[in-house]
Amino acid sequence: MTKKLTPFLKWAGGKRWLVNSDQLGLPESYNNYIEPFLGGGAMFLQLAPHKAILSDLNADLINTYLVMRDSPQELVSELTLLQSRHSKEFYYQMRSQKFECKFDKAVQFLYLNRTCWNGLYRVNLQGNFNVPIGTKDNVILDSDDFIATSKILKNAIIKQCDFEETIESSEDGDFLFVDPPYTVQHNMNGFIKYNETLFSWEDQERLMKCLIEAKNRGAHILLTNADHESIRNLFADLGDYSSVSRHSVLAGKTEGRGSTTEAIFKSWV
Image (cartoon, rainbow, N blue to C red; front, side, top):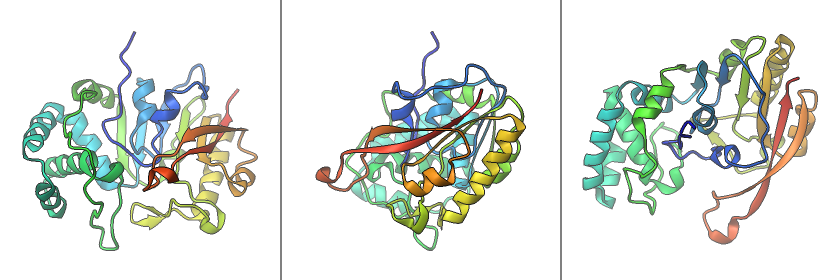
């Protein structure tokens, strides 16, 4: 049996909880695997498809995936060095650095992702990463397998772009896994910032239009989104709706965490 890889990034809204649950059904077969909101890539790493198109609007995130694909062993070496240097003072020193080299940017991104608070990605209005240090000290993880991850990523086209461009590339028989930021109508939720700009309700409407067009081309679609009335109404024509439960881990205080639900829409024969 092929080893299932764990995401090497922690990502707000990541789907490792879903791919490891019994709440998900997948198409029996498909051509290209396409994911326009890559984030932590849990679904891609679980399925390990032979052909894929992966994208995200976050340029630093995509750069990290490209470096992981091309230089996995070098990443291990650098992160091992940073493990020995990690401290509160060093964290804030690294956070303030501005690197030009793509490899150095990826090392910084991974280090901050693993040692910041809750693996959160957040930037200020100047585009500077501003998440405080977290409670985790491990820069190298027991679950890491950068070589195997690199091998799987070599099967994919990886690009930084808007979701519309990626979805429009889908064809008959392709599988679209779509996990956008969970903005609802009137923005009555906690997911406000995404890649320095708001993923607006208009973006949700644009996403719906793109997915209906992909459905009409014959693509298989699995969409996850906020389990909110406005979302259920907007995507009602996309496919079968179901509500899945999950444990919320983003609240700052333990008592603010608990069970919540997310919406899933499936469209395939």
